[in-house]
Length: 177
Length: 280
Image (cartoon, rainbow over all chains, first blue to last red; front, side):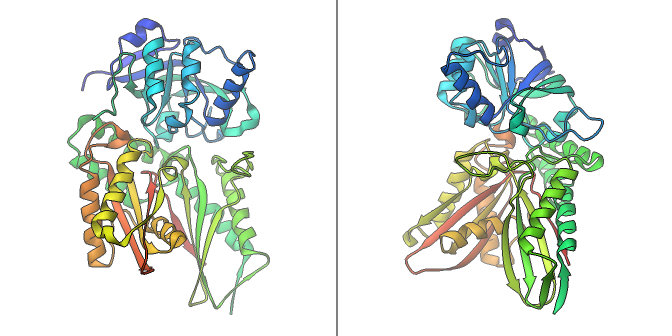
């Protein structure tokens, strides 16, 4: 297997264009957690013409609802949730400049097309490896929707978070058979 | 009659919730090790290796193997000569869930209502299945169930004409359609027969068996082998990224059914196949 590609957020067009479905990557920098309920709120804000609580340009959203942080840790277990539930929201955020999402499992053609059109990437992380993946998180803080508990938007700092390119911006799809 | 105190039930449930989430059973770990040895696809092998490493970290550091610490399903076998004292059995179990999830830093994933959707904040209520059996003991099994794999599950009222092959096609079709969404490698719980709700219960109950332990019934065990072979020929693989290891096991339970019916149910379980039991 070739060496993983090291990426640092925020991602540029060039970063994304270099990636191909199936590539192993190690992602470092800031990423934001967000899942079903948080996405619904973000899109409601957009539809009301209001500003989002985070600037998504160049950023990566991690579909993750971590377990609470035990004493002495930035957070508990933190693996990906299934991505297709966010498909309804992803094209709009991608059009605003979101460069990547991390989750698990295949997604809609609309998402695939949005990634091609706006040069963005979808990364697949290892579902059920929350204890292992949490080791890459060096800090975590809630930045929006604290009332959503595990579904709040958190700003995570990660070092070499492992994932595979699931959908690249050229139409490549690791799940295709 | 033998008295069993609610406080003891609460304490036991709290402990089992935590152990289930921190400590993947040796059955699951053993099945992953075997899959790691046999998997020819390099990426798939790497993912299974990461899952084994993950299980070890979770066990040693007492943090959940998966962040989805589940909707707590409790299977209770209540001896008809046992007498629950000091409160209600349901309340005792829910209090155990409340304490176990709070003290164990487990995620609270339960909403008050499917449409209103506010988090209850303590992972209650649990889903509780009680069976009254002979004896004076109370056996309780907790099985925290993740949402991702539960979402890929279904019940289908097949026509008797489709027979065994129709059941196989349905089960393999459900796993095929789920692809990488339910966190493969999965364990596939299958119910065949009963009524609509009994069949779903059978599929879930089948997941309580140790991973890979065949059915006691030789014909059902043969069906399990055939299903596993067909599923592992789909090339879905770990996380849906290709490979042979799509399922670690298929567990089937059968039950008598109506002359007009052939109910079948598939309950998909991710590789975080968690269940812990205690007898009081």
